[in-house]
Image (cartoon, rainbow, N blue to C red; front, side):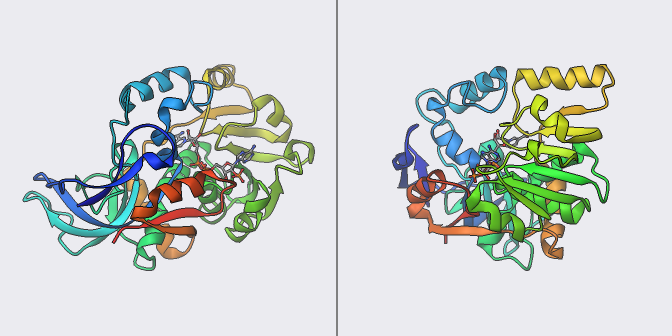
Length: 333
Ligand SMILES: NC(=O)c1ccc[n+]([C@@H]2O[C@H](COP(=O)([O-])OP(=O)(O)OC[C@H]3O[C@@H](n4cnc5c(N)ncnc54)[C@H](OP(=O)(O)O)[C@@H]3O)[C@@H](O)[C@H]2O)c1
């Protein structure tokens, strides 16, 4: 089969089209004919992980050490990237009961990756579900990562209907889903923070208000929120305190040891304002919720740009080249 193989760590050119053996499904696995995949934050990070220093890594040092050991020293252990996919079940192992050949599915492979290829195999009880009927393969392929992460991370904040929520990084993979989920799933009033290029997108996703971080500092507006959700961890608790209502939560998807200590401190002292550093495992149950939200229209999947599989290097270059402008979809078939 054709696959884009990450031949070494480095710039997008390390991604090369190669013929590789088609994977064979084990007894409880399905083989999916991939129709579309995506380029997300994880692809860009893994492709060039050798150059990512602990300080550039948005997680504590120990996480970086584990990631470095897992990722491989001279070249990525995971040579086929692509963590999200949509496609058609092409064959199923003899013990598979949930899916059958011909089923249209979408899913999330996480750091195991493998979707930048014509076929992939995965366990039937992995993070895979039937594709939302109202979405194209491209739209379905770019949805799982951001939506699953946003859903699982936001659940930690216990948002109540009518509360005010601020999302930092609102035009990104996780942030664009967080804006929609906070608004349409949890019933909050949402402010999205991003750079100028993403303002229209974030407004179209349902944000009641948008803030351009290149022109305005949201901490000086006098507005307060029940939740400040920072996806990239570029803000600080000290700066955000004055933007939190009594009982407010400061939720981080990216954090260092300092924020972990702040979480511990605010919890142990019973402080009114809480810091929450959260991890999203990425479960099949979350994907099924995401499917329902996509089908009900509460969640939209926004494809910013399409590329073909053999143009993957170009797609990575485009994704790295500037502000976020919607998701990058890769057509495989
Ligand atoms: N906790 C977990 O379980 C978990 C799971 C997955 C990922 N993560 C973390 O999530 C992060 C990646 O998120 P993602 O996939 O959404 O990334 P992404 O798609 O690259 O989006 C990043 C967003 O942040 C915006 N941004 C950059 N600087 C900003 C600032 N100063 N203020 C506000 N917004 C800013 C960008 O907007 P512009 O382009 O317009 O600047 C962009 O919209 C990584 O740090 C990763 O480690 C955590």
